[in-house]
Length: 293
Length: 233
Image: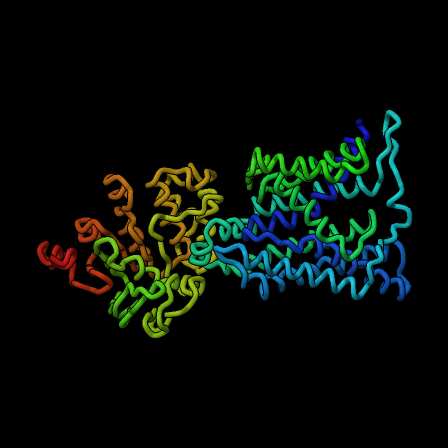
């Protein structure tokens, strides 16, 4: 049972990275990005293509992963910034439907583009054994090295995001435009630029999630909606706009799924959905309502 | 005194409904001007038009001789026009100090900074880490005024400072207007309370149904003139 809990917590770390970008975009803009999962898959494929490219010029192993990581993060930030500035800003308003429709459309476009370019075959990022390496724990338990690294990254990303939101000038701008866009602009803020910066940061998290997903398991063009669902469930369980809430929601989802898998291999995902629905019914604001400090 | 801020034939619309009908307004550097009028007279719409929250024609609003009509609010505050909005509208997610710091986003240089504000409103220093909307109404109004001052504007527009406040608190807040003006500020106050408006201002405009129904020196206008212009009866 302890092993199941441990595996669940570690799986939750990955789900947290899927969900943080979603939580940030919703917290700042009240925008639900229904293409979140597809952007994670897109980032994974971008990394796979880039790794193939750097391998072709002779760089291999950890060096190539670091090179691609260094390149992918600023590119993702720029991509997210431009997407918000030139596409998504035009969908924002009192009616949430335009942003839902546009991101849903993007989801379909990305899936078909990936399918057309890469076929339906699953792919992964070679980790030279990192994804199978394990750490022995007392009591005959063992945990994977990569899942532990992912979990540590999830904690670091959540803490960094919470600090940014609660204690930096940029975070102050995020909270101000979220509270009252009109007055924030009256203070001299360019709300469209602030939104673009938030989405840029969200896409850095999406890129990290995509690379780690492809390192941990495989990715294929049709995976996006399932990843979106996990991200969405983690955000809802934790409480919209709360980063530590998202972290806790992701852990709860991961643990629930692992318990389900232990009961029956077909029950894992299903049990996660049940917990999500239960939270939605009993506590629709999430377990940890918005805490921005 | 030369005109610092002026409007010429200013009109404003909310969809098909017209709210302002050709407002001519002059504001000279260093003076305090009050705008009075009943609910729905167009006072707040006028303030919003001056700050870009309601779109105005390019030439209808001029600041320091330059047309600012149609500019976005962020650009107008950068040029030196700040608004204390009706109802205060503080950011609930931000502390008192964060609200004040956000007011400095326009990064204009001048005498107003956190230390100067805390000298003017010492209670805000004590409560600087508290969520701004947890303060009393009067203290929230101090934050709203301070937030606008942090942009170091040349013109400070105050929309209904006394709304929902006790008379003693209103007096406390308006007692700070001379100190604000002493720093070279030009002030426009929108007020429903005629006696307060006359006391704090040198000139007065009365709005009625989106038009200027009366204007003149505050101490020269008679009570009867003002009542007639205010209520139209």
